[in-house]
Length: 148
Length: 408
Ligand code: SF4
Image (cartoon, rainbow over all chains, first blue to last red; front, side, top):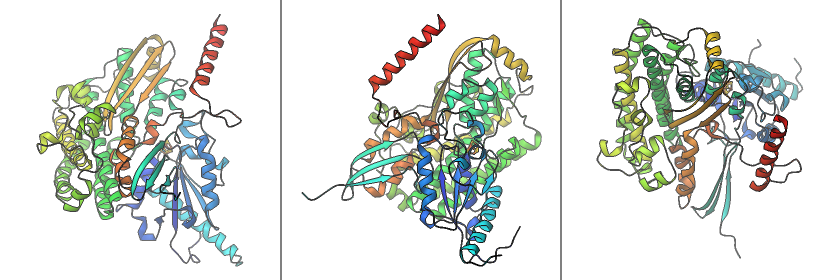
């Protein structure tokens, strides 16, 4: 794994929840609270996708939610990365044969990091965000024209 | 004419909402004059999937209806299935199930206290309560192997036994939470700002609560003595005299507002501690599964015909399941009713006339859980037209006719 050397600011994260069972969502919130406390790394949940570097998506995406998710993704400024938290967003998980699921998230928007688990532990979510961080940093370098 | 009302859409993706739901409000100055709640964004068709899988797979699926109270749906499911199939769980398993359900109530209520504090702007309080919540999650992880979605129940018993070390850890946690709830009472209930912010906000009278079929802590805060654990006791609750926690028993008066809901929830944590203490001290010996072999269990389900309704008092109110078995190894009909479905009905009357700044409290005070209650709300044809009820009924009749023809 690379080193974080180019990223000059804190990493801001936006969380969109689709047809999740909520467990992954509260594990994301748990990652913010004192036991795991990601804010000490500068990772912060923000209120608008326009401010975010990383998009966290949970849950299998129901049909009428798919275009809303696409819009959230499009609103995020470059460079950006997407993390899928949980089995059901990664592959459909327990909901694989539902009639109302628009498919795994990577069929709707491009995904960079998958966190398997049903639900994954907060440590795993933090690890995924750090991986996304590296990706965002690489993209930023590219945008600045500094090739590695 | 000058425009006097403005339209505020909230959701379905919104930072104040952890889950997708849409609230559309029309406001005149600070006052809300019209609201519309649109739900259905998290509908996954779980009941339908459950009717295609076998009962053990469906049990795991039922756990994923809701991840916050992730034992409530399996609990209602196993109770219903046991009733329908005529299986009885061994006493030790019944006690273990009750212990896990009450541990979950503790974590869920503390979670809600943190959320409501956050909605009001006390973020320090959110972090403090959630720090306290980690202890019970650790305990649940120690007993079941996972922080959330414990997979602890099985039709006819429980999947994991409690060992000596688990019982020690439970006792340790009980001591911790007696102190923690004392502390929470001080912070939430004696704080003048918290009281001023919640008194008379989201106020539900007994009449409205009955009319809207509100359930759980919301109904109890309005002074209604209802609790599935008291009214239709099951498992270890039958041995314990559980009484609904209502404000008139605590302070002698009922407001039915967000403050009362807070009080009811904090006292329910204490009630849970009492129940767990009793269960741990009186834990019966013996086996934990009525039919330990899953193949045999599925065979029994295939052989048995029957139907039943079962209920469990989840942290947010009553969860009701209906199951019908006829000749398949899974349910042929499965119907789930979750408490938030009733409780969300209170948003309309409570929001009209309220101030915009009170929306988060009204929305959060019932502790809504979208993923439990989302249904198919509107049906659209391919060209975007909405189908009215008559057309849906016509389609329904056509399908019946088709099936009738096929069966002939
Ligand atoms: S991955 Fe599992 S725990 Fe996470 S939202 Fe999906 S069903 Fe729930």
